[in-house]
Length: 315
Image (cartoon, rainbow, N blue to C red; front, side, top):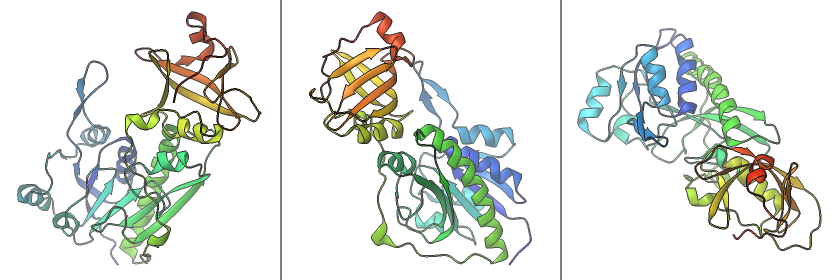
């Protein structure tokens, strides 16, 4: 048990991590350094942009390290120079080697965006929505050499809105993650937390998503496609083709109806949205985004590009 302020090194990259870093900065412990992935080009202009975590760290005057390689003696010694008591990881984007897992006296803990052991991997929030889950949450784990396999320290749950997207849910879970992280660190300092091993027989995986995962197969049920659209919103997003033009699809709603039309057939496309036959029931699409254009309502799109009833989208 300790009441002293801990020296913490934080490792994370995207918005989810930045929110957890913000929470740490409100706590009693000192974040002495932040490790983030290197800055990358974003948007149409391919402008080099700092990572969200770097932005938060620099605003707070915290040193930021952005190594291209983390398995080097040089990087390990650099971290060691900050004399961390604990390393906190949230969506950093790389698996840590044993040399880093064992660097701090209190080890490494991770904020994971699922109720482990379900959805281990890089995209837990997206896959939980895609698979139709209704209960979501975060788990703080003591890291080991596996992929999100470490002992669990603390869990927190929420019941999400039925229309939740990956983007909106990630925002909620990032806040929940920060709150739960502070509780877990407090419990570790007080000695009031007992690590609980995961039941690996109940584990499911949440692998990294690829752009091609968004291609819609209209032979699937409307409910499955609806979950896929929400789970891939905002990235990489689902899509289909109108002739040679790719349309990204958003704001889905299942319409429970029997249709003799072939899956992928447009039943109607007007001010109410675009209704498409699926393998089971139909799906109403409220918004879409053509390549090179902004996201818009189906009604706005149809004003300049009518989609005729009977048009059949391919797989």
